[in-house]
Length: 363
Image 1: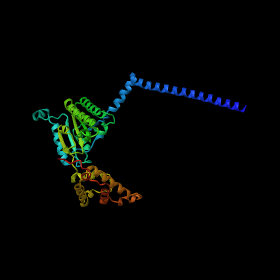
Image 2: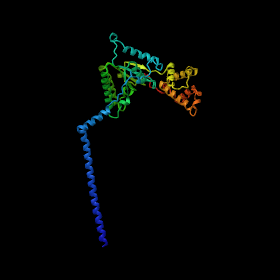
Image 3: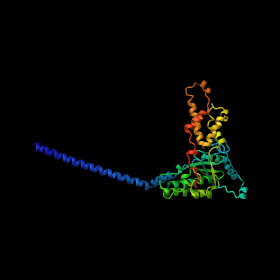
Image 4: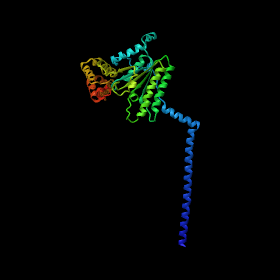
């Protein structure tokens, strides 16, 4: 009897296991059917009109360039005037020629043969010299509508998307310019090196780089043909003769202007501007022999306007830390001195002329 019971128990267990296996197999089959059905539904969504629109919207999102226009006649967009002491004198003179020519009467333009459509200005100089800011100053001077585009705004991980975005950029600028024929338009292509550099045939990604460069060339030519009120300003840390800039694009540049490192008068004006909120500085401070000597050393070492900003900010931070815990009625006893600027330069000073070699002219 015991053996019979054991045999029956074993039989029941085997039957139960077979049922469970069949049930699991059925579940797996059902899951597979659902998965296949979902896949078909997804594919169908792309084939259907609604799915096609979704795919088109996705493609447009990838290829879209976000352009922010700034009307430089608007007070909230104002920057320092081009003839400000904070702008290098030689730079002022270069832009004055451009502005004077663009303001000629039509008869004067015809008489002189001057063509002002689609100016292509190449601003080059060490990093931190304020090239993009100068482009805004120029736009403000001619009362233009301004926009700035950087390479990251155009680059993409998707194949061919970068060149398509460059094409779309120039199309949008052309449309905007023709909708505003009575206004000057300034398009600033900031840090343009990645778009117009020579393509090394042995380099990785040469095909995509060539397409982007071709798109820039085509866009510039179409701007010249289809608009009369667009100025393109390119900014670069590279000298036009450095060997980095593509020769075909270089031939299209109407004007090469170097944004130089600050001279002594500009350096002084920059420090006055960046330190203006420090009430502990008296007017006599900027006329002291020690401050003038400091300025001369900054100019000699080749510091940029961006670095002046950093040093001034750091000096203010060091000085303010000295006032921690000082009662308000005692604060005026503490004066800002040259020691704070010297310390800031020691901590933050990295002269552009010593840390940036992109201005080499090449052979």
